[in-house]
Image 1: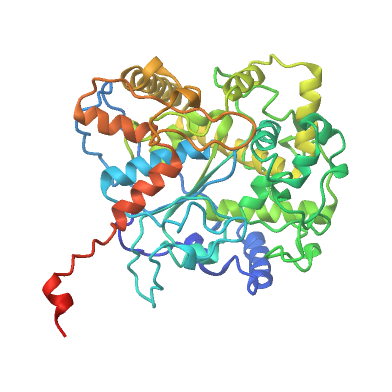
Image 2 (image 1 turned 180 degrees about the vertical axis):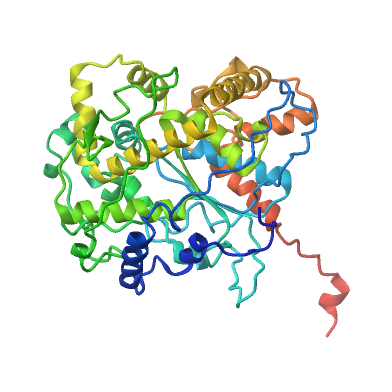
Length: 496
């Protein structure tokens, strides 16, 4: 485990991060990828992810005011979180805000609320950023607000041995959320009378490069900053496009087998139907891709595996949180929290899908959403598989126990902190500190605190319910306190 505040020795994977993803070096990178990939069997070499070697330290039933127990390992505190859109990322952001706030860590903050999105991330957009000039000290611990991922620029702000992670969501459910939230922002969504009408004939509404239309197709792929296949270029200035996709004629083996039959097995509606090919169990794709696009997608997924230490899956959020706590050597309490930026009715719809209570029309809509967002589907399928492979290595019974404890602690927190014990319609939230930003056609739910909390519990409960925009402002004021000008004495004003 590297010491906090120092880059430490660079592994082959981390060294690659410095030069692998840039417009001038991409051709060189692809050649090196192919050579090293074939020589080292790809997954046996520098692309192999290091699984955590420490166990999650589960503690006694949770109470708000009890001080945390010392961990048996060194917690990771240099973190890069790619906050993808409409994927449950606001809930992850809240736990990062709370952790950094509680431990006095410094955040790489945008001047406003995003790092120039949808443009690629630039280090110059980080508030109070100064180039390192070859030094090894980095002033920030956590980079976690909305951006379009650009590794070269990220590494100007964060050390290469930071823990990189993100979250993905099934395009079938992401489409519902994105259509509702971005209907006034995306020209394609704005012209469509409904999501069903849009997905029935998306090209009747969607135009390449139109303002806001990156929200309407393959939003995850866009957020990860990956190049688009030649037939899907969204704009002339789309960055890091490959000049010769034919150069990528290589095979990336699947990330892992489908999960075995157990209580946490994904519902068939979410987990792709397996097929058998070349001795491997693979997911059937909702669309067929030409060889050039398929090769580029395979390369993109391999590259993401080399950069990101963990990718969470929104449909298995609690399981993902347990794995995150284990990977970071954090206590389970550090990842227990409430859902943020959730739209009214969204949880009920998700539960219906997971439990198989869907009509034929809804299943057809899901298939169309996945087909239209085929790059996002490839991302989701890949990281869903890798998550379950990681779960198998973590231990199924161990995971089930940790998930049960996490949910019990969340329920106890809700009863202790929240009026009504659950998220509420924003009309009931009169305290502007806790009222989430309202955007889109659906109401964004929030929380009201119970009265009579102790000062210590009040502080912690406020952290749990503070929406992302208000929390960012709070951290900004903490890191960059406003300077107070001293009043000038009258005698000085009158002096020559």
